[in-house]
Structure formats: C-alpha cells, structure tokens
Length: 392
Image 1 (tube, rainbow, N blue to C red):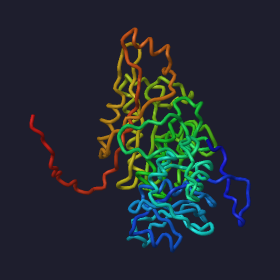
Image 2 (cartoon, one colour; image 1 turned 90 degrees about the vertical axis):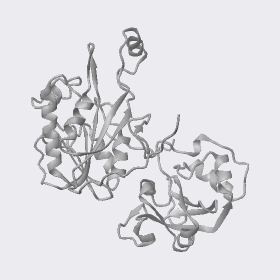
Image 3 (cartoon, helix red, strand yellow; image 1 turned 180 degrees about the vertical axis):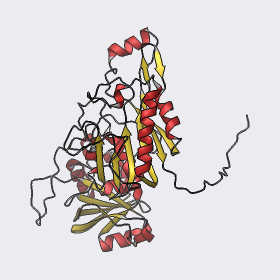
Image 4 (cartoon, one colour; image 1 turned 30 degrees about the vertical axis):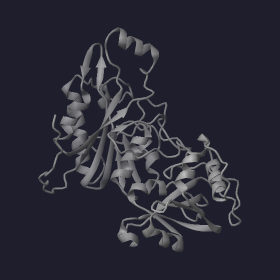
C-alpha cells in the first residue's frame, strides 16, 4: 500500500509525491452548487474522509441520485471545518475547495463501472486506483478489478455496530503509539471515538497515556492533553490520574485504557494502580477515584470511553469489565458498550489455543469499550417505543 503520498503532476505544483484519490458525493439538489462553486461539502458522517484530503489529491464527484460520476478535480486545500457554514443550513460543515483539470468529464451509470473496478465511493484510492478511474472517465472500459486500487489502511472505518474489529494496531503511514508497548491501545478505537463525539478543535484527555496513541491520533484536528504516572515520551505530562492538574469542566472527551489488574508490569512507581490485583476491591476503589477526577474536568454532556478487559488466571475468572461498568454508572450516564475484538495478544497462539481446549478454559477474545456521558442535567424523556411483535 501507499507508503508516501505523491502530489498530482500539476503545472502549478510539480513534485515527486504521488496523489491519493477521493470520491465525494452529492445529490440532484446539491450538484449544481458544488460544480459551480468548486466547493465540495460533506456532513459529519463523512467528515473524517474530508480531513484525509491533502492539496493536489484527486477528487471525483458522484451524484447518487443520477448515478453519474464527474471528474476530475484537484484539491486546492486540506479538509476544512466551519461550523458557521450556511451551506445546506449548516448541515455540511466539512468541505474541500477544488480546481478543475481541463474539461470536466461525465460518466453515466457510474455504479456499473465502479463495481467492475471493485471501488466504492467510500474508499480511499491509491494512485493506481486514481489512474484506473481516470481511464474509465476517458472511455477506456477494459480496466479490470485490482486490490491495489484501494488503500484499506489509510484510515480505519467508522463502525456502525457495537462490534469493532480491525486487524492492525495502527493505520496510515505514521505510527500511532508504540506497538511494542505492553497493552498498547488499538488506534482505531480512539479514532472512532473522536469522530463520533467531538468536533475539530475540541480538547481530548488521556489520563493514562501509555505510549501516546491518543496523542498521535488526535493530531488530526483535535487538541489533546495526555498524562501518565510514568511518562514514556516528552509530550506526555507526569501526573497521577487521581489528581489531574486541570481546571473543572474543560475537557470534551476522555479516553482511558486502564490496567486490568496486576497482569502487566508497566513500571515500578509505588502509586501505580496496575500493581493491585483485580481480585481486590481496592483495585476498583482506586479506579473509581480516576472516574471522579475525570468527571470533574469534563464539560457537561462530554463523553468518556473506557477500554477494559476481563481476567482469567489459575482457574479464577474476574469480570473486571462488569465491575468497572458498575462503578462508572455511579458517576455517568451510560451511552453504550462496544465489544472490541482482541488481536495480537500474547495468548493468541496455537500453543495457548490448544491449552484452552485441553483444560477447558477460554482465552480472552474481546475487550469492553464502555461509553458514558457526564450528565447534561437534562431530564430524560420517557421512552415511547412501538415494538414489533410476531405471532408464533
């Protein structure tokens, strides 16, 4: 996949960097505005794609109503965000300014050709994919499907269900955290949380920052502050998560990947909560102090995501995740619980799989991502749901 971005071979900006490609969507209602203004807006649902765009990347415009593809264009700017944008009544605050490359070409029945190429308008196109799409726009229909047209690692998907699974710890061309760090956080979890629950410019807090994954993810249009009792890098501030050096009500999102007990030795600091076994109630008492402190520094209505796993050791199962949920909901309103598939852990080997079957125990296959909100002091509406019932 693409290791380096190359800029498009425009006369204004000759360079050796190869472009990515993006397909923006419109409808019959918005097509005229977008083609005339050369401003391509998108809603919050696709804001993460807008911020993936760099100047000189190739942009195509796909009218979903008419099944028509227009191209091609070059991005003049990086992805932009303007919450006061009046376009479409402010519902499309994410946008890119583009310029044309010669005469705009038009491809009808575009879904047929995209299907033949194996391309979705939601994909991030490699330079090879851009060339293939340009060939189709030129009328060369002999282009065949190729896995090299799409860069699946450039940005992770925004998940729509409560089962999150991604095969790698990081994404893109730069590391997110240190994948050699014990218990390193999968970057896609933080990526999904910030795009669901924050907007550009919001402040994200990680009070147990580890190798700094949250910092690296939040470099994309988010402010971030990270603490750890023993910092592993210069941009992590030394602090105890039970006594954060922050004012009340300043944080928009908190992410925590806390210890699951004393199963991993992170450091020798005497106040490290990770020294306490998960079988002791004191472990949860200390983590509850972290919860209270996070609640203090969060704004009303702000969201907290807590990643946690259960423990099984020497025949004893400890439902750590359920205990953490119980403590969290004493201080926050529950939003949801996500099941995050565990990958690349030490027990994910044939040796441990055979031991689990031989001795009749289960390896840990998932973690909980518990998502809660600081009470907005709004009275909860009484639910009036019309369920469907089926006769048996």
